Image (cartoon, rainbow, N blue to C red; front, side, top):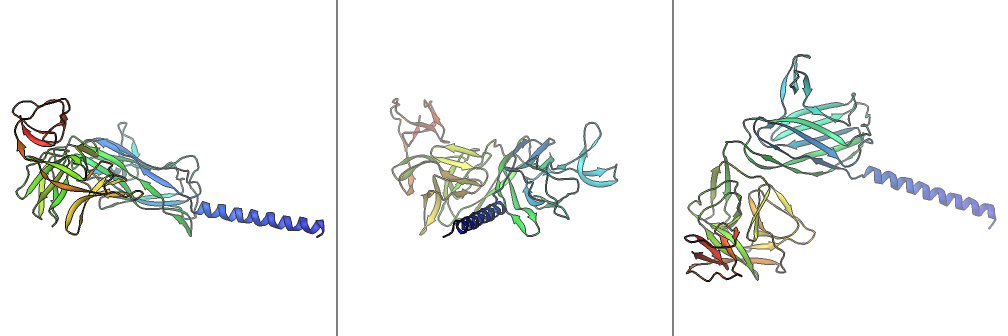
Length: 370
């Protein structure tokens, strides 16, 4: 084959490779993974809050976005009369008497339209440009909100999340970004809250409350003290204590608990069980499930995270057994020796070094009156 023809074929091959590479790069760009993360906060009634939504990458190739932010009751965007423009807007007057917008974005240009509307449980934000002008390239700050905690807030731990997310690059080009949640902690309120617990027909369930409560008729509460082989060792509790996880048994029904919440973090553990105050994804441990009418704790499979619902619990242990069964409760027995190897727990599941007189303890997995 002539050398000139070889050269022409090589050029065509190189062009083909370049075109293919460009197409792959273009496809990769169109399928770019974007993560939006909303910040958490702590607040009390009357306090101001700054909440941000940040992207993990610059969004200079995009022109519009839309998402919802879900917030606890009583956390609001201030909406007031802007006397300078004689119109009500999302904003407030600062300490210097100057009007400040409650909604800001560092990626938008002055020609972008940024709109907000109240929805059930939060707010919806839409930003767009009539001619698809792209965002600025010097920031990852998608949104900054200046919020207020009013008198309707209730103490507790809440998960702040994004929903309905979409980022648009052009008329027919958009992506649905991944999102990361954060926690909000509300404190200082005297408002009470009511939690409803639904006992299934299987007669077993888990519960954690952010306040002390009496055990209603029809229910029995147990501390999950330890694991013995494939069995969870239980000890009956005379009361439900705040931020303590329990396994409950009883008649299928709906039970109500009311109190003033007092929780400062999402997860609380006692013995071998952990309770959560917000919907929480777990990648290991055991979750209470009913199989063929029998309740037991089933192992979370590898690479298959499961969500523990708010106010519920899971077994936070790594064991070989695929299933952990529920044992009967231990009985009250006489005083036993207090050797250095004794495992001593208060009735609420908190381990202590020494058992004091005239108290009820769980010693070596048995109820003991000292």
